[in-house]
Image (cartoon, rainbow over the protein chains, first blue to last red):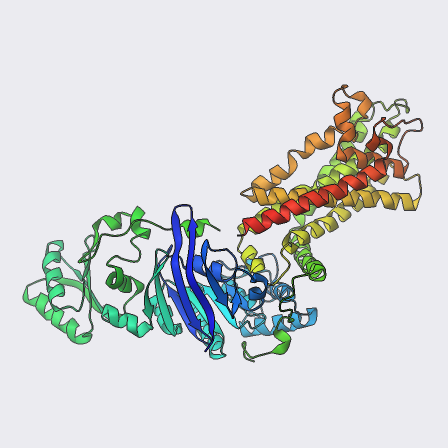
Length: 346
Length: 289
């Protein structure tokens, strides 16, 4: 099957920061590909290169079989882009925004109008369609932005963190829309910070860190790698942290994480509820009092710890006191900072 | 209906392999111009404020300086100065469109909307050209209002309709040329605020060291050639001549642009468009990767 997105050795530097450090991607037609990573990992830069917004320093890429570097105008006819920062004109109404985008996709005025009407309806914006986008809520703006990306039903879609900053209800609503979209055969590259989102939507996932792809696979494969679910607990007395950590390392299914100031510990738990019960028994037997304990789904952070030995948000926390007492066992020390350049670029 | 159904009418016209041509460039520019005009209608304060300043100038210059500025060949009649003045105010007003263009483009470059435009199969220069078209329309409206105010304070057209039309044509062309300077400024600064002042500061020396408000004969000798070769002066003199607002015994300074002001005005405007449009489009392409 022909690849809808193909990239080889993409490198892009901003000053000293290597936002992309040799990224290869292959996305088969009609599938959903998740680019999973923390802020500053290079996700946005990768999307911007593939959507012709920036040129890489080296490497090559094809989208819908068209070379991104040599034939960008043709690539633009085959893609839709929906970004993290809703790219709509806030002084225009929802309808005017969509009609403008339609006309710039070279639809006739009539088709652009018709399409705008359909999309407003589809995205539950029909009532708000004649109000300026300034008056829209965050969720409505995202929906309008997504609608703008779908004006011509492009064969390849890019969504850069489509749900970042949305409340759970709006996130679910957007997921529904995306699921329907990909059900229709569109190829989608989706960047996200949430493992849950990638798990929910993507057929396959690439985990990126500091401009490199550090793991590939399906959500299940990645979760297996982290040992599946995670047991998380808070001990009552800080003095018990070390003992509890020892217990977790012995009975748990992977490396433990410990945050001193919140007295929180976690460990992968492939054994699920059985392991949870065992941990409670063990800690009880040693007279360690627990404030809170539970089983939760693995997050990006857990995947990161198992893959790299450092936490996904170490970089973000660097300015924060939390970092000083956040330690990860059995891995290299948290990496150097490399973030925000991506944001600074816009 | 499904949002992904293969719907032929919702697909862009197929132009595989074909470069984006002039026709599409014009179409895209008009679409962007419409967007900018809609924005202007939604923020009418901007248009209102850009009207207050020239109206204020008409009144201040007419009634305060009118009695003290003498025109060679017209004695010291205040009404002669008022007639003389209008060409200068008209020309100055159209150049103030520069600030609107630079602020608007600086704002667009900062917002996510520029990514939307750049990911669309549209003509590259259309974001800039569309903005300059919208500014041109705004300038035309402001000029019309200003002409009415000028008529109220005693300004008259003496050479007939066609000459007056030609005069307004030259004014709009000058205004359009200056919006391209504004576009370049808007692309060169970091914030819309900086773009507004950056679009304005240099207009004051440019429009005052000219024949707009005071005849060049009244200036120090070393400044006279600067004023007479100032691109802005050619348009001022050209429209005065076309409106028939020059004093009866007026002798234009003996330099080429003052002797052929209409042609000079036209050439200057075309030159400014050619140079600044090329620079702005190049800068836009670079600034956006």
